[in-house]
Length: 393
Image (cartoon, rainbow, N blue to C red; front, top):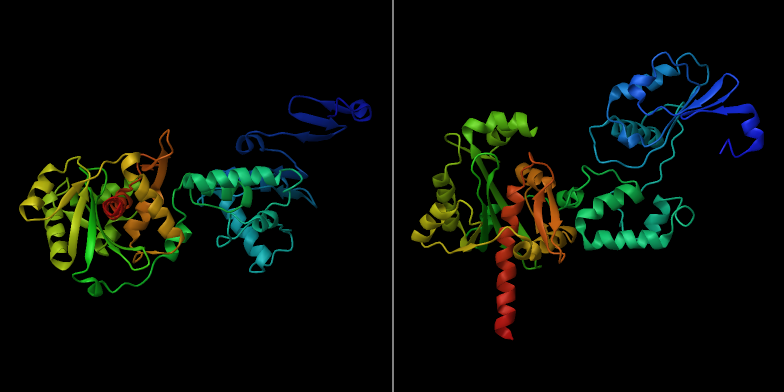
């Protein structure tokens, strides 16, 4: 731009990353953490603050303006997905200044964003959240991106983050965890004694969790979920270090059962299922065939009905869609079990060429087993509905 303007090019010199006028310079610094040492900066413009990954970057920025009487630091940001990042810390500070919680007259804050409770499909929310709508970005584009998010729920967080400036926990999360948390309530499990239910079981060997989820269908077409999770006792502390969550606290709180040894004791899992069959009227146990032959044989000997479910998109697509719907409509009920929440938060979805969805991990260390067991349990209800419809026809 300078070189194309006769007046500016006559007084400014331009190099690859610097524009100079006399002794003043505008410089692009691609690696702030290592390039700010010794600089004496009057104004800093930090774009994409949400992408800051290290505190020393921000510290270097502040120090570089210390000798100036009236320095300006301009932060430009959209929402991000890492709530442990310096960008999130700056965003939260700005929010607290804007709300009056913190008195900091040196900060001028302007935030354009939807709230977590807003309907992200509402064009009025779009206009309030994106001041460039209709100028720098068209409403037609917004509608197209919204339609894509509605068709593939794994894209909802990306839409809310990129266009409505709503911070999310991770970029590819499947379930909106704020909606999940609104489904939590106090549940009197004694009232469910002898009620019909279906059980989903997802087995593991050493790395993942083994999960049992009991699903009760409710009168509104929703479900109440009762989860159980298992892991080997000898791996509890190692898992805590590897996965970044406190397995020992979950064991002590009764949310996770630690079985003897360094592999899951399937006998304990079988006994738990049999115990549940004594408490509730279990219609069926849905399971993944992987590593389940001995467990299923033992259950069949005790008269427990079992049905295999493949962990592929054609088999789980209906359950995935149902899970999304009942959570969004608040027709899913759970008691806030932290292991179940963690597994649900870890889950993403993957579509096959025909658009059918199956659950998947976002990272190798993520555990999604309780969420998968929930889908197994729901799949039985959906299969029953389909069979009933075919019978009526």
